[in-house]
Length: 387
Image 1: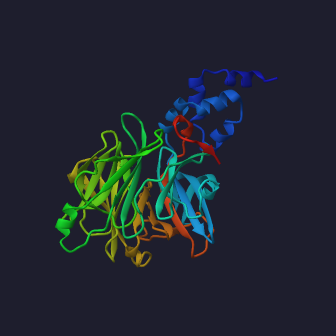
Image 2: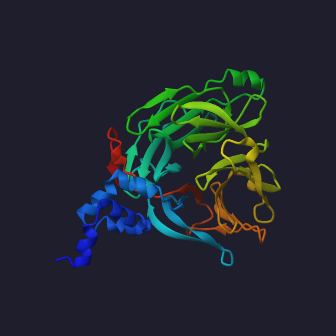
Image 3: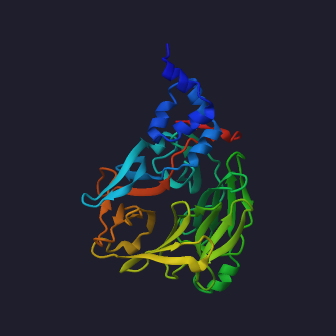
């Protein structure tokens, strides 16, 4: 028999139980799903996932590929860095192998929103996509869109949520490379294809791509903020712009000039409220800019300048992404495919952060990620599978 305390807790109104449970660490919440059928049903309720997302705990999903192994680790941040021991303080959430649901060992993380992660791989020169929630152990295999994605074709992606209808949308933009000779004419006649997959519909559809711009020369991902996706593009005069797609209206529009025009930059979102532009194109320094007021071009502020030597020499050949700025000012960053590192302004150093035991040939990738209980079962048309 249950004691009085247990009976009291189990018989509380659902809204009070939800309020209590969503204050727990994510691992404790996962354990609470096993308490009773009533609580298990609560975790499957969209009200629970919505309430939990209103109090997000920021974290990372980090992927390591080495020695034909491919696995991901999800962690939650503690907002502090141990500068003396060069450690990132974090709480491990879970570890999993993408090959448990993907068709090959070459599946990579692409983007993440509200706990849902898009994984991507190439199959016979075509894109393959999987939408996965590691917390609920659910995934969806999306149908393949048309169009050859192999180099030198330019393909970029983005995942976000409509601000009005709350529809989850995966965007894929494709165009052939531009010949630098007669660039203006080539860009004017450029054929850009944009397709959108709305979760719960079961199919891709084409939308109007707007004015022609040249997207990043490498596969890249749009930064999601305020219901919009943002990409770095260049116009006919090779001016770097930020292009915006409103996920509700599905209309493209120029959003802002990039704060610096030199080729070699990345765009990310900090604290779910600021666009961050990282200029890594110089051989000498990395410059981090933050848009203090969303949509106000004059609000771009040079936040910090990082000297590449001695710790980051040669980094200009790979993309650099800003992931998080901690309360004490230290900055966590990703050197594409190579390592995580953080910059300490007090010591002017950039030590590496290693969340894995790995050899020098391993490839690493990382995205900001917030764990959630958003169930893929809410998208009725989709074939949802557990792994």
